[in-house]
Every structure is written in structure tokens, then in C-alpha cells.
Length: 327
Image (spheres, one colour):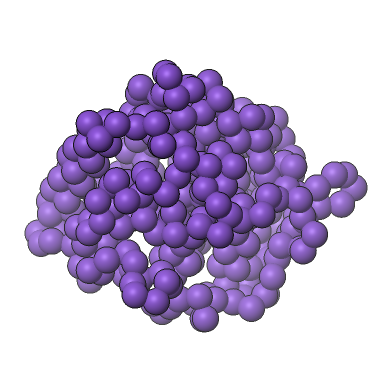
């Protein structure tokens, strides 16, 4: 039975009580990727099969013959999440299996970089799957090396403080929207109402659906495990990671109003940005501001009016703000 959330605007207290992630997995304390899987499966329920390439989640899931999920799981090679999900979907259809969602679950390295050919091909063909990229902004499982999801200025093991990341983060949602897929959206582990609504929306659409899910990594971001949710909230509140949806590659809806927190507040929480000068932080702020203008302009072209959202992605009680869809 699909016990996922049904469509009303909600928060933590109204999430499904069903758990599809067993306790005793081997994620790090405060791991955003583990919370991401837990929340997404609360929305999908048990009629889902997960395709998992090499990633942190390969380790989190545990060693054969056991695994940490209460749903079927297919391990596959690093670059093949979308290709394997395509084959699984075709196989299920060929044998007349009961309605089952195929969900590829990959990190930023397996999505932005190593698996990009497969995801682009599957998107171009409009293969019927949900592809979730849980984005912790580096190759965390192998020692925190940079990926093309690593933000400008960030420390990683391959972009040390003396030579930090000097390229902007790849716009993966924009790239996939250019494939004219039916649905793409951004969300975070700190906004479960927004996350579950978008998973539920994706479940109601056929074709290739993409969710870009920000999932902070305590060791990789050099942030205390108790601050993971705060980091994700600040990413949204500062505009570093805005919440939005794109339908058919052309209609964009912002799910928040204009950023309310300086980017410097988000950066200062994380040790991976500790080396930045004020001028470098100001450069990041300018990039975030420019990106917001582009998104807001796209929203205005779609809806003819400003985004309807929340005054802030943080409220005064340390809980996620009420992020709502347009209209």
C-alpha cells in the first residue's frame, strides 16, 4: 500500500509514519543523504524499485546479502543509473508487472559527471522513471573530491584552500529542462513539506522526472552534524539553492519569495568556505543575485506575476518554513 502523503501543504508532523529505511545503516551522523532517502520513500510508499549506482548510498545501504531499504534495490555501476533504470522499466513492462515506480537514486558525481551521458540519453528518450540526485556537492564517498556540482570557492581535497574551486556549479536542472522533460524540481532535506509534495507530483506524471535534492554532508561541508538542517535552510533562505519547478522544460514556478538572508551567513556556517575573503564572498553573493533575477524573470514569463511563497525559508522556531507552490 502506498502510504505516502496525499497532497495538502504540510510539515514534519504530518509526514507518513511508515518507515522504509531500516535502523542500523552505516551513514555518518547527521548524513543528509540518509534523511533524503527516508523522506522520499515516505512519499513513494512501497510500490517502488530503487536503482543505485556507486555512491555514498552504496555503502549506507550495507553489504550483501542484506540491505537497509524495505523496497527492492538494484545496485549498478557508477555511470549507469539511468541506463539500468531504463532496462528495469522495460523489463517490468514486458512481464506485465503491477504498477511500480522505477527510481534512480544517484549522487552528484554519478549525475553531473560520470553518469551524465546515460541521464541525458534517458531524458531525451523521455524514459518513464523518477531520477533523484541527492546532491552533497562533491565525491564524498571517496575522500571529498570536487565534482561539477561543487560550488565556486569551496574547499575539497582536490581544490585545497590555496586553490579552491574556481568554476561555478553546473546548472543541472537547466540542462535537463532543455531536454523538455515533463517535470524537474529542486528541494532539500530541510523542507519536507516541499520535498514530499514534489515527489507526489512526480509520481503523478509519466516520462522522465528529475528531482535535484540538496543533502548536506557534515564531513564534506565541514559542518557539525547538528547543523545539517540549518545549513540546508540557509541555502534556500540565501538563494544559494532556490526552490522551483519546471514543467515540460518551459514553465517555471518559484516556490519561495526573494532571498532574505545574506549569502555570507550561509558560507560562515561551513568550514569548506572558511578561507574565503570578503571580496570572494561578495562575488558569490553577486552570482546568487544574478541567478535569482534569471529565475524570477522566467517565473514572471510563465505566470505573469511574482512568486507566491514565504517571507523567509526560516521561521523563529527552528522549523522549516511553509514553502508552497504557486497558485
